Image (cartoon, rainbow, N blue to C red; front, side, top):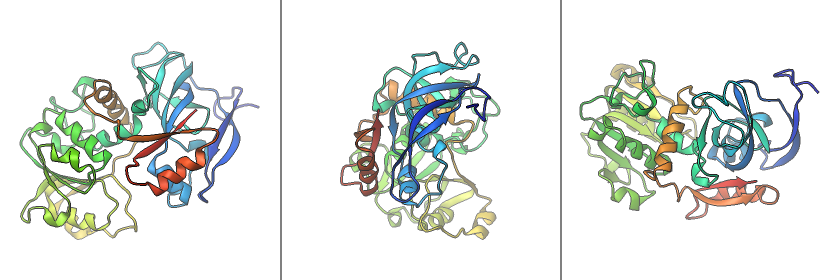
Length: 342
């Protein structure tokens, strides 16, 4: 059978997916051959993201089975000619962390700039969720020689948050989970952001936050009443936090929305317009997400960021798929994230 994508022979491989009815379906998928700008990756570990869980229950818009699963870690089995000898490329046998689909397949293709070569096939190198936290810092064009991605040759077109300015700023983080801890680690590892005064609101990871140089409170009502912020990161699912953020943002400030709200909120547009505030919605599909993947690699590789508490449990691909999704749904105390083990 010819591939609809490349005109080359397809490879048959196993793939599992959900239809949104709390089900897991096994099928055989005709995977296209990788193009000259793609890798073929054999899955070894794949994280089960919160969006995967929401799709499992029907609470997230259903994606085709060919693009389910995106937190990949695996072995390169084929490398397009434009990648295997290029800077930032990979060779057959390399280990790669991927942001690409379908990572719920035994084999899948990954585009250029959607993977990072890693030293080990260990859960800590499932880098996509780590990069999501760091990606919160890349939401506005800013030429900044002291910027977060300096080691990756920042350019005039690089995305960079306005908190990258040199002057001291007040930053608010709504949420204290793993993405928030990753974001804060990124702030601490940026020369420009090191001057920021950070307030954090939430109930998770208290031990971590009590050790940081932040104003840590557990509810928005505890934020100093007259405090206003240049940048607010909202990593919660609470619709009410949108109005709080708009009330507390400075004129021409930046609000970064990093989590889906349930139920869907109404936006105080008049106040946003009056303040000339910018609202950004970071996405792993951004062309600059690769920068966050590379930075995630460095922070994990050099043990600047400890992800040991991120991955709670591994699940066997052949026998424990339903358990992986159900555990992710019900999240007993102490449970963070699970991953599929091939």
